[in-house]
Image (cartoon, rainbow, N blue to C red; front, side, top):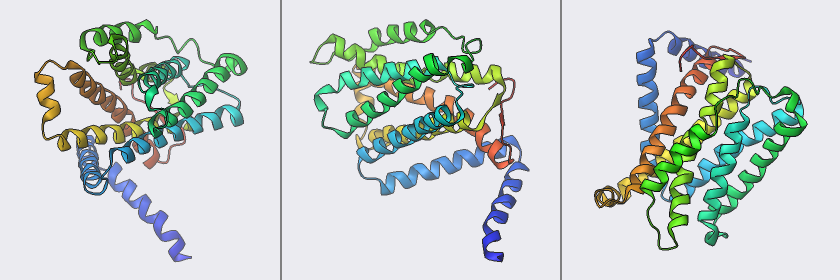
Length: 275
């Protein structure tokens, strides 16, 4: 009996100790832990494909949580339809960009994720529309799509396959970077976040961590080639890096409050007035 209770007790003690630290100390511990994990990933993960798969698995886990929420609880409250529509948009663009690699696991996983996302959109628009918080999901999509299009026009790489493909390549990266903003706005207005929605957004944060780790590994392995290309006016690489950083910081902030809420044993997650 003592052995069975030892682990939960230890976890609770660690949780209390972490909660007793100041915000600055908690953030520092989080940064150190993330850096240590990045080092471990660099040492033990030798293929970029593994990190891509880890990214997609984490994203898929979030989508599966949404499917469970919609089918079991019969409600889509707390979910942003606009974030789901932006997700479907950038996934479709990414599949079109890499359609020639249809047998590659990248496109296969993206296609599966797109199908699940479209199902979520269908459920929210039609089957569960009475539970959709439309008044809180108020961010106009052109706030995201128009600036991203301008960035894509300026920074497209001019791929040999054509200008349109190059435009779509940069466009999907920029949309992906900010696709979660409507969801954050909805959560900010709702204040209280029910568990499945919180788990879903946290899964997106984990996926973004693996994606960021993948970019860091590519920068290191390239020996500075990517940075040299930026200096040669290949701005799409700079756009990709900035997109990764923006999305990582957006989700890292949420993940901080998510972990804090979990360690406090709170069933319903709360966000501060400004996130």
